[in-house]
Length: 375
Ligand code: ACO
Image (tube, rainbow, N blue to C red; front, side, top):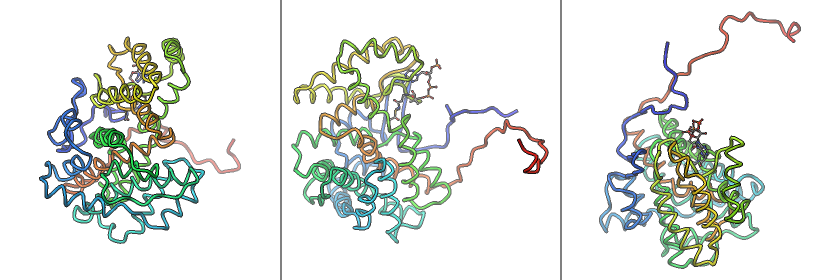
């Protein structure tokens, strides 16, 4: 009898050189570099290069890579029209459809090879950010804003979102957030991208599969759910009772728990400080205090390996920057783009069809019943 690995828990799928996670120690490493070092020193552009090429860029390499990212910032007019027509849809449906249209309209994106996938992937890192910003504007009844050449990826994203140049501090916060979200090994959406790449699908199809998988509340949707929880609690003093009731009702507390981390998620600890400082500067200490009380209420569950994850503080940070809840999952996609692209390319380099088995537990010997004899 075969053993069933439900949810592929603990199953090692393949080798990777992109990221290392030590879930017991709460450690995350991109291409050999600890996330805490990258959080302090690296920009999103440098981290993207690192993930795609396997080493930190020198000045010239970074300049050239940055030029390529900037050249990819615009999206075709028909994609803007699609976003307009889908105004009432869930933002992740809009992002998935718009991304599909971008690659569908790009006739140079079709071959499932590293040579084709790399430039298309670099363009998509920029285009996904542009799609998210344009979608936000259109949903607000505003016109999309064209990208600005001299701004960094993070600053330009905020500029396209709000229509004015962000402060250096806000741009730095988004840059850090994107760095922290850039890569996370074989998480559900990256796995989906690799499964698509394993069939020799073009990189655009792989990214669309990843976006579709990110949409679920157990993966990308947690930050939005956490922010709703914070707003529902409303008062730090009510947090402990609220969480106790949730747990008693057998519900999961959003922003807690992780398939791999059984210790503090290092990305969450980076964002905790940002949420505290930003809240203080914006005259809103309340959200942070509520989050702290929720963390306190969840302390007994640390023994079971349940700690806050990256999404726990992300929602508060986005809200404080003026980004609406409905854009939190798309924000995650903007950050995760380089990780998805790197994994698709790694899969292409040494490709094998990914096709696990399912253990069949249904009946095997039923007799065919003609339609008018069925109940
Ligand atoms: N609140 C309360 N209890 C929890 C939580 C939680 N957030 N997460 C896990 N548990 C408990 C489970 O009830 C289960 O308890 P049991 O053994 O008594 O039945 C045990 O911990 C193991 O949980 P599983 O759901 O089996 O763990 P799994 O690895 O399958 O799930 C997951 C991980 C999906 C992230 C889960 O922790 C969860 O649903 N968390 C809330 C959603 C969330 O925050 N998602 C974001 C994840 S990070 C990311 O994708 C960026």
